[in-house]
Length: 228
Image (cartoon, rainbow, N blue to C red; front, side, top):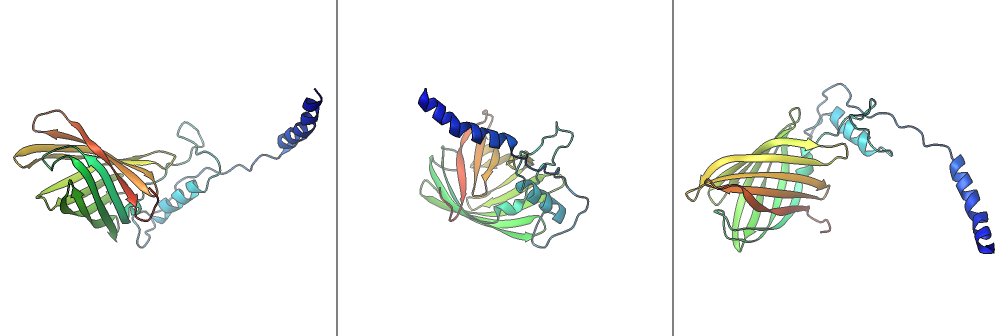
């Protein structure tokens, strides 16, 4: 009983002080300002970049659309992809090659406006190949097209919308449409999930001929120099 009383002598004043502490100042709603001011070397406008910066600086949770004073959602910035990435994953057997480890390096650079290009040097089950990449982003429609010219003799056009949430997570939902390779009709779909500033994840589904789509593996892109 004595120990309990002594403990209360220390706890109660701390609780009282916390209860009397002034509330944190209210942070204003973060919204997209009017205007379309271009920024050199960027896809997004000054207004879109300022919106993202304001949301990242918040010390309170973002307010969703159900709130009358809701914050605007952040805008996806394809500048995210610029730089060098380490690729790793495991792919099942397919017309593209035997099952096995998939590794490589991707390098992306900004060309102009919302256009980007780059290359992949990859290895699948001990077989090396390369990919030339072009990316085009429609920031108003939030639609991304990634064209991959593969040295194995085919082209993939991964096109689809980019969805996001108030937390700043984005996913590119893409579809290649049907193509023919090695005498097979191939159709790839997938989702590229931007998990953090230093990694994104690619999940794929593959349909061959008239068979239903099956899992075609998960691969990770990790920014060069970051910890795994």
